[in-house]
Image 1 (cartoon, rainbow, N blue to C red):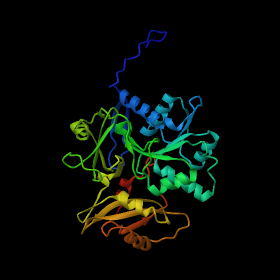
Image 2 (tube, rainbow, N blue to C red):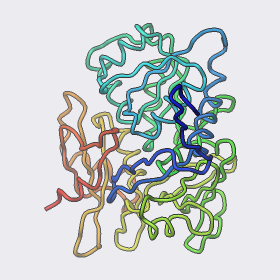
Image 3 (cartoon, helix red, strand yellow):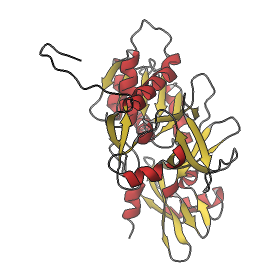
Image 4 (cartoon, rainbow, N blue to C red):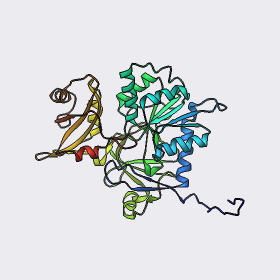
Length: 369
């Protein structure tokens, strides 16, 4: 490219680094994922094409609301870049505020919104506490999407019912630019899953010997495709560990069902080893969320002299609830296997989250005496 003064812009190739996105660091220190122009463009196009069927009128300018910061890979790729590619009008909010978001749905005729699970939870809490009827203010919504962390099924179902819009849950990472899998508009959604691999992306669930596991069995999720980063910035050892055998190791435990839908069970680093049994915190969280007094929860492993680790739940109660620790533990004992239910429950007014709304379990563990 040359301007009027004869300046020549540097030539960029598809494999050149376009951005460096730092991982969220929810379980450790953040690393800079080097994403190429090809990574970013291909994933933005895939994201746009995935949502396009929800918008039937090609001559109408469609609108997406961005409430995640643009340094977040989902906002940058699946909303900003995908929206610009598809000619969407982008409405940006400086910070997430439930009342402002609901107001924007109406005033800006938002058609697409993407959030993380804690944002969906906050919107539901606002509606419940205010008694607002959101079916009219959200009538322009064509589709919503969730990523960044597993969405509790009760939250997903409650949001769809309250806002009368379909919520598609997907899965991605900073290292994969980010979208890896998604429930698709053209196929039935399966709540509790992150759907099917997106175009051009391959996913396997593997055992400790890198062998693919059978449908229904759990294994580490590994990925390859045009969306996978070139490596971690100035971290060759970390890159070699993450990219073994041509596949990116996500560090997540997942399983495919018979129809090819992927479920993310938990982070490998969040796995609780209790007396020789594997306990997956997300399973406990899903059950606890069905209790009428529980608004939000996070489960972690805490040190135990006899068992190695014990299960502890941090719980935010619904407004007006007075449920106590003994009562909730007794209820949990009836709902779960003996080695799974939490022996310790700590009530809090809120849970620590990152700038992008992820619950920081690492901080909950560090806070233990």
